[in-house]
Amino acid sequence: MEYTEKKFNLPEEMEGLSKEGISQHLGLYGGYVKNFNAISKLLPEYAGDMEKHGLALVELIRRRSFEFGGMRLHELYFSQWEGGAQALDPNSALAQALAKDYKDAAHVVPYLTAIGMMRGPGWALLYWDPEAKQFLAGFSGEQHQGHFATLPVVLALDVWEHAFLLDYGAQGKAKYIDAFFKNLNWKVLEQRFADMTTGQK
Image 1 (tube, rainbow, N blue to C red):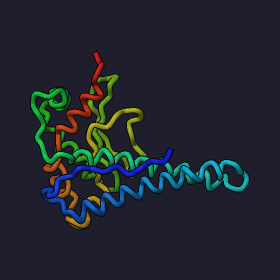
Image 2 (cartoon, rainbow, N blue to C red):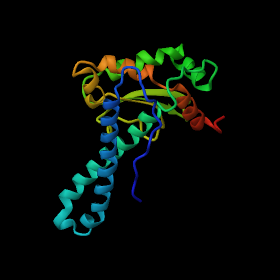
Image 3 (cartoon, one colour):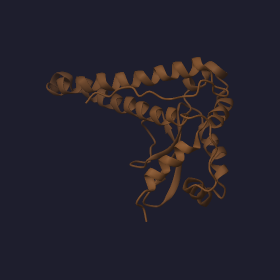
Image 4 (tube, helix red, strand yellow):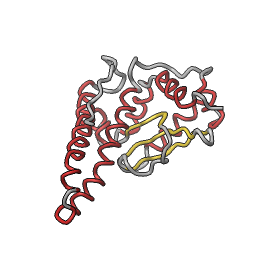
C-alpha cells in the first residue's frame, strides 16, 4: 500500500505562525510520505539478494521507521490546528483526566513546554496509557526513538528547528512553543481522547 499526503483544513491566519513557515513545514511532511513510500518499494528487491544488498537493506530498515514517524507525527501535529484555536472545555473528559494527573489541566502546558525546550531535535509528546489509565509525557529524539511503545498520542508538539526557524530564528523555540499552544484546537484533542477511552471501564 502506498501512503498519500493528507490535507489539513488550517486557518488562513495563525497567531505567531506565518503562512510561509506553515507551507514549508507542510512540504517537509510531504517529503516523509514520499521517502517512506520510496524505501518501501526498495525493500522486496533488496531482500531478494541479501548477499549483495544486506548492509543497504539494514540501513533502509533503520531509515524507514524515521520516515514513518515523521509522517504520522506530522499528521497528528497539523490536525491539532484544524478548525482554529479553541480552549479546553473544563467539563470534558480530557480536562478532568488531566486535572487528576496534573492537579490542574492547565499545568500540562508548562510541563510539555519544559519538555519541548530540551536541547536537540525531536518531539514533546503526551500519551495516554489505557491500561494504567494515566498520561505519560515524554521526548522523542528525532521522531523514531524514545517512544512509550504501543501508547496512543494525545498531543504532538514538533520542536525540530524547521518548525520555528523561519519565524523566530535559531533561538526562538520558546516563542514558537507559545504560538503553538495559542493556535491549538483543544476540541481535536478532546475527540482524540474520547476515541482512545471509548469502551474503557
